[in-house]
Image (cartoon, rainbow, N blue to C red; front, side):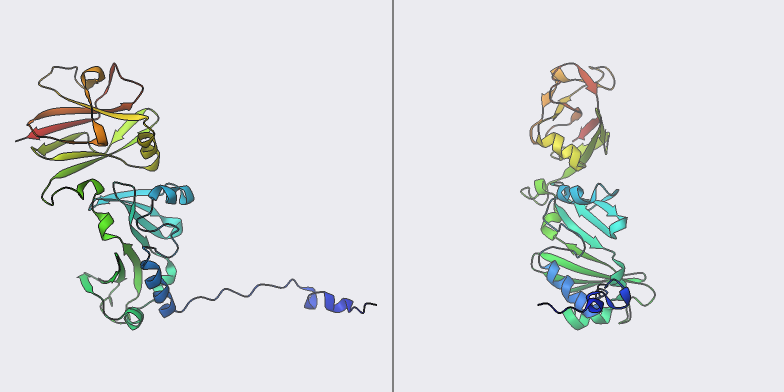
Length: 287
């Protein structure tokens, strides 16, 4: 035998129950969350962190807006996610940066209360940066505004950096004094777009040819693009052309120049081994 109360089987007042509003972490709790995440090279709100593949982030967030190259890293902005990321020549994330509006509630005093005094401070007009070492990573709190140096200053953004990854991978095994130049390139259709078309280097310098986005990296990794180059004197070839059948196939997408001269390079589909393609990069080597 059942005894039921029909009135009580409906939501009070005939309304649909609602979920409680999510709790917002306090400023100091947010500092602790950031400190914990940074130990793993992570920035809150960004699905992939330092040391991980930028290509993986692209699969989740798309391509983003290309920014500048700074100190060996290429930066991309994701405005809708309040984020900026920087990746190295190996397409590894090495600087993940959040501009999440929640950070504006955190003050300099909050950061010091949780993390203590920073390992380093740097100052610029209307900004102060507090740097904390977090294992192999760095956690940077950037305060800005007219009161940037005071305890009331609020956070503008936070960086989690990977110093080891901010050095070009190909340069890590080279002496510190070795010189190198990076040429980034992307492919649109059958057209190659290099970041530089004319370079002047010195004898002993190495030029690295590096894919500038995930699509181009995929073409290189799957062997669908090759790098060719040859030394030319005067007008021995038609202006603006490199005969592929006379050029050398350059391994590992880099070349060290040991003698003065002029080189012309072409990035071409690997199936095209004869004929001519437009010159993409000219390198002048001086003694």
